[in-house]
Each structure stands twice: as C-alpha cells, then as structure tokens.
Image (cartoon, rainbow, N blue to C red; front, side, top):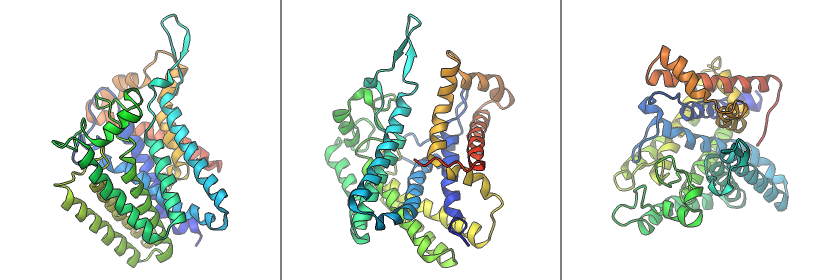
Length: 373
C-alpha cells in the first residue's frame, strides 16, 4: 500500500478542516447563522471554534511528512526553506487583507487603499508564524526539549496574561495583555475591528500558544506513521485526546477556554478533540476501509491553502469585476432567504459557496495541478 493510501485519514482530516472553514467563514447575509456556526462571543466553545486550530493541527500533520527532507539538507538550506515559506504565506495573508488594493474615489477615479489601514496579522499570518517556529524547534531540538518548550509556551502565556493584563479582569477583551501589546506595537488601524473595538484574535502574543497546536499535530502525524493504522494507534490517540480534554476542562474555571484569546486551555481542548477525530478517521478509513465518502474531502486536502485563499477572495473578485455590485446580498435576499428564510438560508448559501470552491479544487485535481504554498 502506498504512502498516500496508508494515510488517507490525514488527507481527509485536512480536507474536512478546509471545507468547514469555508462554511463558517461565508454565511449568507440577511439572517443570523445558527449558533453552532458562530464563534463563542468570548469565554466558551462552539464547534466553529474548532476549525482554525484544526487547520494548524493539520499543518503539523503535514510537517511530519515534509520535514523528512530536512535531514539530508545543510543548515543554510533548511533555514532558507523554512523562512521562504513563512514569508510567502505571511505575505499572501497580508495581501489578502489589502485586496483589492484600490477603490473608486469621489471623482470616479481610482486610488490605492492605504497600507496604513491594512490589518497586519490574520489567519494565514498565524499559520506562517506557527509553522516557522514549530519547524525550527522540531528540526533543531530533541523531542524532550520541544515538549518542555511547548509547556513553557502554554504556562508562560497564562502567566503573561495574569501579570501584564488588567488585574481586575486579565482575560477581558479590552484589558488583556495581548491587546495592549498589539496596540503598542502595531497601532489601532492595523488591528481587526470586527468585535467593535481594535482587538485582533490573531494577535502577536496569542500566536505563542497557537504554535503548540502545530507541534502536537506534528507529533500525532509522526506517531501514526511510526505505529501504523492498527487498533492500538487509535486507542492511544483517543486516550491522549481524552487526557488533554479533561485537563482543559479542569483548568477552565481558572483559565477560561477562549478562542479569541487562544488560551492554553483552548489549545488543550482543541488538540484533544483533533486527536479524537483523527482516531475516529483512522478507524473508519484505514481499519474499516470505509473510503467511498473520502474523495470529496481529499479535493480540499490536496490544495488546502490555495482553496482557502480563493474562498476569502472570490466574493471580492466579483465585486471588482462588477463595481458597485453586492452579489452576496443580492443572491441571499432574492434566493436563499426566499426559499429558506432565517439561519437555514444562511447555511445553504455557505454550503453552495463551499461547493463552488470545491468544484474549482476538483478541476485542479483532475488536471493534477497542486499549488504548493
């Protein structure tokens, strides 16, 4: 059995992550989405909160395969390989927030959107930084030291929030240490404003614990490769996942599970759930040989970053091609909210949009076009 078949479960996991990321990121307008398809308002957890950390976990899985080549490379080549990829992914994320780069001014002319108002950090930027830090640690340090540093990241982040945040409520949106650091280093205009204030859920400080999602994903992938696809592998993955979940829930009263702060308890919970999911996928796909349904998700898994980037830009591209149009609102108000008013219509739009992205990925796959980022 070849390598791609043997670890089909990891490809499916990566594809599922991209699929659901598109769905939760592009709800239809005109109605509030189902609660489970929205992030927790602050403390707490919803299924949607699992999507992005699962993507980071999948990045770690992929690294367990791709980093093998580093063993035969000289240090300068390894560093160049890592830093080039970090820079490329970070730059793509930054350009995505700057896109479409220009706007129509009051006189009907074209003017560039100011870089001074462009968000610096975001989803792809976090992926880039976490990949870079995790790659350097894993390549240059022993497993023991990587584990110790990962623990230091999680505990140190907790301490940093307590020490440098508002003593009255160090885990609040407006007074946490991460927000204060971002405001000091980046300024108000370079942060995310979707919460009504300048607060970036992918900010500098919270990227530190997010690295652990990638690291645990790496060691999970390595463990699966070394131990194979048997019942013992599934049992140990699920046991480890269960332990992480229990630890997270036990610590939750003193260090709340919070996606937007990316708390250490959030890291443990999401990694635990990802281990359970991968264990279930290995059992279903590798052991029980139930593979008929997997092809849909592997399309996403073969071009994950490209399809995600496409999903983020596609509606903006339509707006650029048809200036003044609001395709998203029009199609929702005139179709989806007519046939299924409310949250269901919003979900149907998201699913249809996801299928459009899937179709593009399918055409690329049929032509054996794989865009590596």
